Amino acid sequence: MADIECEICFKSFNDKDRKPRNLPCGHVCCSSCLSESISRGSHNCSTCRSPHHASAASDLPVNFYIMKLVDQPPITERPKESTDDFNGGNCPEHKSSYLYFVCRTHNIQICRECTVIAHSPSTCDVISFKAQIEQRRSDMLKELNAEISLVAESIGHLNDYETSKSNDVKYKGNEIERLLQEIDEDREASDKAKKAKEESTKIQNSLKSVKGTLENATKKIEITESCSAVKEKVRSVQIWIEDTMKHFDFKLSEQLYIKDPKSFLRMFRNAKCEKVYVVQQSGSVYRSAELRVKDGMIVLNALHKNIQPPQHAVTIQVSHFLDLDMNTDINEPALKIRNHCQGPF
Image 1 (cartoon, rainbow, N blue to C red):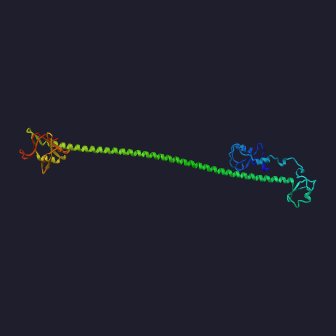
Image 2 (cartoon, rainbow, N blue to C red; image 1 turned 60 degrees about the vertical axis):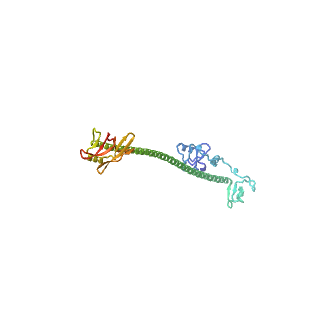
Image 3 (tube, one colour; image 1 turned 30 degrees about the vertical axis):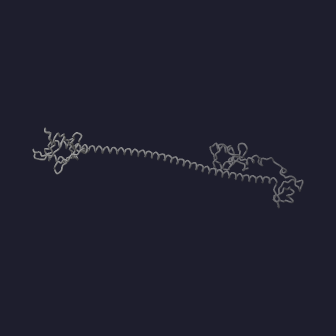
């Protein structure tokens, strides 16, 4: 029977090397064909090419519905039976006759005499008891095959569902890996930003330090330049004093004269120093007065006690009183300093 034969080799199933095995797709093949297919490296159904993951034929379940039919020998192989073996016993109407037939019209078992009188095939649906059994068996096989098909279809749906869920799980796994990778990248970017901020802070602090250093250097440069200006001014004063000293004549009489007042006045005006002071110190008494030029004349203010000249002023220190007199030798005004003039400082 085709229903109990392998769909690949068309050989009958048995309980030894050709046990019927259920594939995930619902098809059935014998253990021998399945083992041969696996040995070739093929893991697909030979009928529909659906994949399976069995590494051996024994990994797939046995179809016990078919095995139950296999356990019964086929009709052609059964020993010849007489008609008497297929009866339902003696007919209640005809005691000597056996119930060899079935009237499906009236749903009762009948004997040969009943088919002639009460249940004629012309008026009733009459079938032999043997044919009735075979038909019922065929109907049962059809129902069984239908059930097998439903089971196979359900298995196919389950496999599809499993494949779908497996794909979903794989997709979700990939999404999780992608999200974890993004999290790692965000964490790495955050760490880089933090380090960059720290480096920026260090650079800003370094710039502040450099700025402070530059400001200090600028101040030092300004101080240096200011000192240079002071030195230049002091040098100018020294030059002025040297030029002025050329016009002073220290005589044995210890008197000081300005021989050329006009030239002295001109140098006094052109001098870069701000002020010139005359200083007198007698014991602990200290006096000073500013020497100025007014209306072409050298004017000396009154001496004041304990007044220090400005820091950058030129000082001329004398021992005693100062007087302005005429230089009779040249008949022009002259500044005369009596008694131990010590000269400028």
